[in-house]
Amino acid sequence: MHEMSIVADLFTIIEEQARKSGATRVTRVKVLIGELSGVVPELFRSAFHSYKKGTIADKARLEIKVTKIKFKCHGCGKEITAKNIMDESFSYACPFCGSKDMELISGRDLYLEKLEIETS
Image (cartoon, rainbow, N blue to C red):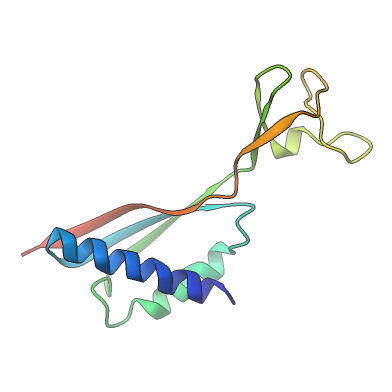
């Protein structure tokens, strides 16, 4: 379960940011997890709740937003979600222009989006 090591790294960031801000408590943590990040949101949540005990984020609420896989077609410039681009030959092609020249623009994300804190 690599989610535990990711959460450990997240808590390093949380504690550093809380300290810099003079926080006495972290009340909410919002994380973005991409569908292609390799992180299972349920396992991440479980690891977070296990890891937070005894930390400045002991009572923090975790919010997870899963980002969808999205491509940008270099042929026509349109943005396409992953479910719309696989053709009959199981290769990826733009449903608008047929181009296979596409760039992944969303879905590999994994980052701390928001941290809410309390100060004395």
